[in-house]
Image 1: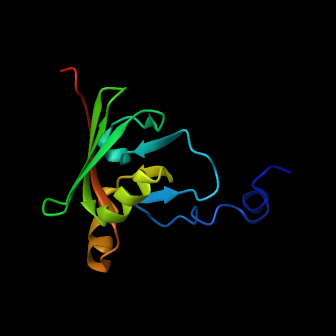
Image 2 (image 1 turned 30 degrees about the vertical axis):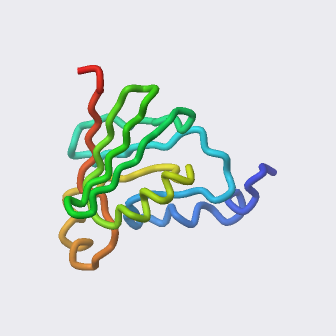
Length: 127
């Protein structure tokens, strides 16, 4: 049996089909986190290594989180709600993945005040 017996026996409690803006890990050592754009965006899934300096800037007024990834020379812009908790989890290197909401789910979740990611945009700092 693997180190993570609870996952093997009980399954992933976060994988119940509901939308979550991000997923975390409290026990596993994380080497990277995954950016999962909506299928409608046509953008690729990206893996961002934690083994680089990452500066995190949160602008609560504009509902935007900016990640400056110094070694990979990328800037990640995350737009949405509930970003303060996400910023804290990223600073502790506990985020496994960040998920952009599918357009068809937006209205229902906006009414429920659930945290959501409405846009993930990645830019190359070299340009």
